[in-house]
Length: 468
Ligand code: FAD
Image (cartoon, rainbow, N blue to C red; front, side):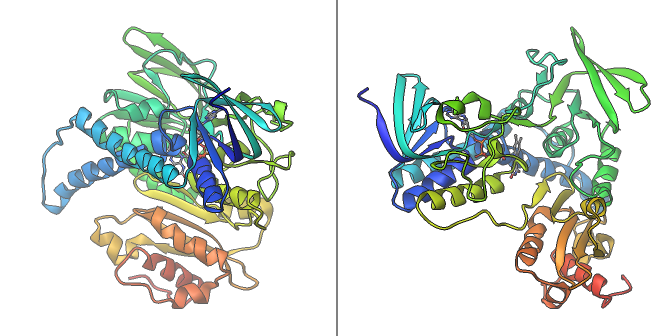
């Protein structure tokens, strides 16, 4: 048709993986078309993920810190929450960023085609938008179709009181009692927000700990804090039924002994994981294999089984994180532009932006034990950190794992305020092959939370033995 276009590189999906890949390919001289079904660019991360959740978590932090000031002799009183203005703040942050992406696309002459894209052949995508169909022919393609929340068959998802993370971020109201189904990062971040806004929270998790990817000892300070604030935290428990009644959602639980019990909530937030969008794009028409779950397998250069088609981000597998998608996007775009590039990162850091934050990268102790990998550790408790105590917080821990054969750092787990920022130094240290002496002798500014990384290395070296 008249609107049909040809791209040297077409990118399917404009999340952090997709827009990064599109911009990099354009910067490297390629004619790029970016296909997106949503009205705004930015994917899950900018629209309904990382960014809006962090805007709300910031507000939650201010609310709880203000409450806690009472014990330091400063009282602010109960916060008055104007949900419309709070929502406007969050939406403003999102639109500033998504609007920024429009500008960045235009600046690079990346053509955005709006609509739902499906492969019709190995060099062709048909995009169905509001104004009809556009055919995009391409030399090379980068699939960045992302993921969406998993729905559970026994839950009435069409009831407005059942929400997923997208619904939680819409901030329609502050429910009286809310059940968070799933004790992973997304569920606990949303729990943190709604707790601060005044909801009574119950968390239910199938595993024997919350945030199952992180070490149990590191998660403990978070567990202790939320136990004191939330109504209930059920571990090793599953939800077997949710019944929509007039006066609430009746939820049936079953614990690990097979005992059933039930309770009624105003809202249920389902945060049990995300599924990749690989099955929705007719990838078979291009010869690209998609597995049962919807994931697309790729090699170290992000190539699918079809050499001129790449895939990146949530659609290629775990961990489903924005910074992983971005990194893969750069690799794919550079390979597409003829550069010799591989995904060779040693680690992908994970962060739960809860209060306190939990962050880890490289090897965890749980993983080391399971795989029989030798390690030694240096642990620094934040009760001995002047900065943490000055912040009014004594919980927190910095744990570093070292390879006993050469004292190189191989893993880090941190819990405490701003742990997410602190983990970057550990990631850099691991990438660069730093050892305990490097971390222990680098002068860190005092008093900062970053010192705890320095101290944990010194604890391992034995150069600090007594705390305080
Ligand atoms: P996505 O962001 O999923 O984007 C895919 C895009 O492709 C979407 O815009 C979609 O509309 C479009 N698309 C898909 N199929 C088609 C098609 N056929 N045609 C046209 N367009 C299509 N990660 C972090 O690293 N840090 C965080 O703090 C964090 N917080 C999160 C909080 C929440 C509540 C959620 C839900 C996720 C969070 N994540 C976080 C995960 C992060 O959002 C994802 O890992 C990231 O967005 C994945 O990027 P992506 O480029 O693979 O795909």
